Length: 327
Image (cartoon, rainbow, N blue to C red; front, side):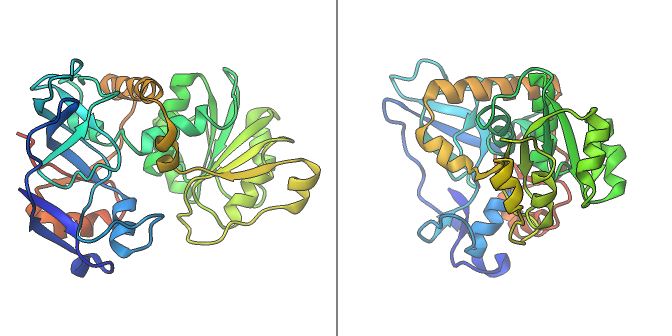
């Protein structure tokens, strides 16, 4: 069995290899064996390969943190999946390989009519979007949230998920040319970042109180968001794509009691119940099946084409997806 693995942390050209690895074997009573159909290349994978992520696996380690595939064998106790079903692979089960084995808990059969490439990307970015909108602050139907990095994969997912939940959204980007693109996706408000952002947000929302801000950029953009939220509001940091330490306002934190906290999907998964995960992924896969939740796909590659796949993914111009067993 083939797998794309990181063998030494560093530049992908030196760090990543296509290796022969032991097959996963037969399933235990509660397990399924899944032939990987589609597995995206995420920024997380590139950070792990570079040795710069929140955890680093012992080497050599198969990469890939999400994906989708067909069940080819199921254990005796598995009643909710059968051979031939398409299903999500739990996040952090390495997917840049031909087959995986895992304990089946919340997984359900997925629609065979849904775009398999879009389903492969549900595990991380849309899940993060869903939890940012539902687990941080209770937002009423018709309430407002603000996010930056709105053109990113997670930002686009936030737009789709917010619409499905009846939440209104201010979307902040860093380039004017992105505004029409996001408006075409159905974004409520799209603004270019800047120090005068709070005034423009108030104008566009009719002075609505915004109690939740989602920050994936960092740097001065965090301060701009902090100045947009209402007293006792929250800014949630879930990435730092600018590479800069975030800036904040002591006055807003002290006198307006605006809080700042972080979110990492991996931590959430450690304590989430199967019922909770099933409910979330049911919601998200339904959005994919309906076409409401999509992300641009730049290209698909076989595992043996991993150098080209990783190089293209590093340009961050659309998602790159491995398709080891996709007919």
